[in-house]
Length: 254
Image (cartoon, rainbow, N blue to C red; front, side, top):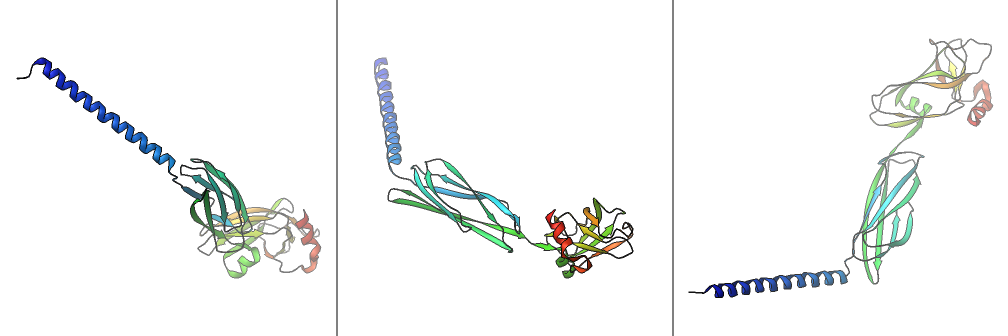
C-alpha cells in the first residue's frame, strides 16, 4: 500500500509530464507559425462596385477594389476591358480602391472584365471578375411616336411663357427607356391658337405601364394668335417649316 509520500511523488510526476507535454505543444505551434510566416502564401481578390443599369451617353463612375489577402506585399497590375490600367504596390492585408469611369455607348449590354496580377519576387497570383451593365436606350420624341413605343400628347395650358406646354406619355412597351426632348422643337397647334417652341431640354425615364404627366417650358411663336387653350393639342414639326432653322438653333443655345 502506497504511503502518503508516495502518492505525493506520483502526483508531482504526472504534473511534470503534463507540463512537458504542454511545453512541447507550445513549441510546436510556435515553430509552425514561424514556418507558415516564412513560406509565401500569396492571395489577391478583386471586386467591381458600380451601378448595374446605365443610360446611353452617361458618364459612369465605378470602383475597382483589390485586396491583398496573402502574407506578402505585392506589386500589382490591374486592367479592365473598358480601358482602365493601374500599376502599384499593395501591402499584405490591405485593400486598394481604384476609381475609374467610362462613357456609355449605345448598346444593349456592356460587360466589363477586370484582371489583376500580383507579383512577389518570382511568385505570382492572379484573379479576375466581371460585371454586366444593362444600357437603357434613349430615343427622341419623333422616334418614340413613329415606332408606337408610347402615346405622346402635347397640350396647351392657356399661357405662352414659362412651363406652358403639358406633356402626357403613355408607354406601350414592356421595357424601360429614356425619352429625349430637345429644346428648339417646334409644336404645331391643332386649333387656332399659338404654335409653340420647346425651350427646356429634358431626359425623361419611361417605365412600363407608368403614365407620365408634366409641364415643359415653352414659348409662343405667333404674336398675332391667341394663347393656346387647354383644349388644343400639338404635333411635332418634322422639319424647319415656316419658322426656319434659326428658331431651333436659338432655343438650343439658351
